[in-house]
Amino acid sequence: MRGRGRGGRSRRLVGGLRTRLVVTFVVVALVSAVTATALAYRDARTAVLRRTQDAAVDDVRTRVTAVAADFDLPPDQRALSRFAAKISDGLGARLVVARHRDLVAASDPLADTDGRITVALRSAVRAGDGARFQRVTWRDEPYLVVGMPVTYADGDRRASGLEVFVITDLRAERDDTAALLDSVRTGILPVVALAAVLALLAAGTVLRPVRKLGRATRSLAAGELGSRVAVRGHDELADLARTFNETADALQASDARLRDQEAKARRFVADVSHELRTPLAAMTMVATVLEEDADQLPPDAARAARTVGAETARLSRLVEDLMEISRFDANAVELNAAETDLADTVRASLALRGWTDRVEVRLDEGVRAVVDRRRVDVIVANLVGNALRHGAPPVVVTLGTGVAADGGARVALEVADHGPGLPPEARERVFDRFYKADTARTRSASDTGGQGSGLGTAIALENARLHGGTIEVAEGPEGGAVFTLRLPLRRTGEDTE
Image 1: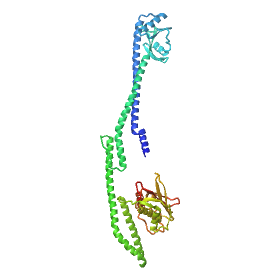
Image 2 (image 1 turned 135 degrees about the vertical axis):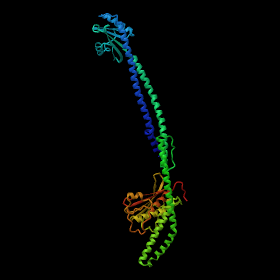
Image 3 (image 1 turned 180 degrees about the vertical axis):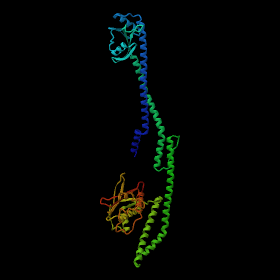
Image 4 (image 1 turned 90 degrees about the vertical axis):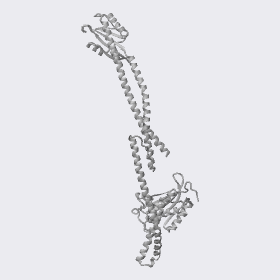
């Protein structure tokens, strides 16, 4: 049982509500943090690049306008190189490429510019009338290229043919945005940890009343009808606790009414049985006298006398059975246990009732157990009498010993008949009080005792339980019903008298 408890607890820890709440909080926090990081990175990168682009375009436009004012056209190669160098000096030594028709000059003659100034940008500058820019990646490094045509004061750019391209290194901006991304990534872990802590606190707040309600429910299921939970707040959990308390109140009140009615019914049965004993004793005495003199009476009177005697005996047995059941219900039974030879007890029970010739016995000798001999006699009488009344011969009584599942020594007394047996639905109810399975089992032709009271098997089971044992019913391998009494050889804590 403890192993299953640990397994149930581990399953709750793995797939319980607390775990689901924490996982949900963490996932939501993680998704939110990643989304916010992506948006922040995108917006920050866009802002940095836009600011760099705008500044670069303004700087290039201003510097080109200032230098071009003193530049004579058409230029030669040397003049074009000086033009590019002047623009570069005014822009912080950025790489500048100047083009005039077929002439090309760079501020750094050794620099490779073809891979950074794309055909698309040159076409856009040649076709446009203002500054154009493009971000390119060259040898895994980012660059911003700004290009613009040089026009005359009157705006006639066709006569000029001069184009300027300025290449700006964007590695600093890339490093800045990467550092920002790293800092935001570093901040995700504390956010997720904080979300997990908040989830644990929230789960504890939610699950604490749920656990209390679960304990109260288990106590209620175990029969502790006074279990209640404290109602705090006005939320859904408080409504649930209030509903549980109302249900428990109604159940407790209903149980109290049923117990009171049951107690009254038991007292009524006990009182009626007790009151019937005195007149029944007189009736039994008269019926006995009539039966003894039945041979001297006319046939009809003799038959009536015998019928009265048989029914009086049956009524007497019913009253005694009711008195016995009442004592069990009132917990007024006592077990006078002593070490007893069970084989002798079974033989004596059969001989007392004249069943020795009608029952086949297979008894292991020397089987001794600490039992109440009178109550074992009652069990044997009820089980064997039931087999003789409703079964078919041969009725076999077997006594032996064995080992129970818990390792203790037990005695097994088996009563088997070869009648029609009991259907499954009858086997489930055969120990119920006043239950009669006559539709399932045909009364033997040798039965002259009339039908039983329906209390015999119930009384037998109560006596078995009083000894710490039980009675099982099953279908025999060759048909018929098999009742098996199982008793411990010695009850725990019981000393032999």
